[in-house]
Length: 213
Image (cartoon, rainbow, N blue to C red; front, side, top):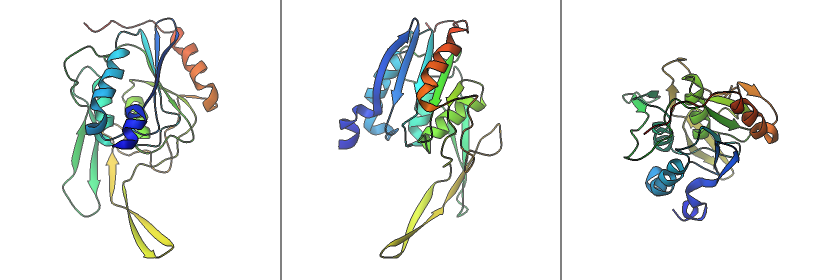
C-alpha cells in the first residue's frame, strides 16, 4: 500500500504530446485495484475526452489481473471476455472480463488507441497489451515483451535456491493461447525509446472516432 501511494497509484504521467492525443504512462506496476482505484479512475477520466490515446507500458513490470480488467472496461463499449485461467491443481477455471467502469466519462471502444511496449514490459502489463491487441482494439508499438503469462509459486529447496513452479495458464478466447515465452509481438516494431514518436505518427493518420457522451 505504501509503495502504491508513493508511486501515485502507478500513474507515472499524463500529458498531451500532440493535438487531440493523450499519453498515459503506467509504471512501475499495475497495483491491486483496491489500492489504486480512485487514482486510476481519475487518470482514465482525465483522458476520456481525447481524440486518440497512447497507453505507455514500456516500464511496467506487471500487476493485478483485476486492474487489467478495470482498465479494459474503460476501453471497450461492451462486456469483453479477456481470458480464462486454468489451474494446474484441477481447480475450476475462472473467467476474466473487462469490468464495467463506474459512472462517468470513458474513452470507450471506438477512438484510436496505441499501447507502447518494451523489453521490460512483463506479466499483467503484457496481458493488457495482448488483450487489446487480439481484439483489434489497440495497435501495439515498440519492442517484444518479456513473455511471462503463467502465474507461479516459489518453493525453497535450499537456503540459496528457490524453484518457481507454474500454477495456472490463461487462455485467450481468440487465440486459444497466451504470450508465455513468446511475449507480445508489436504491430509496429521499433526501439522502445522511439515508440511514442512512432505511435503519434500512426495516430495522426487515423480519423478520430465518435466521442462518448
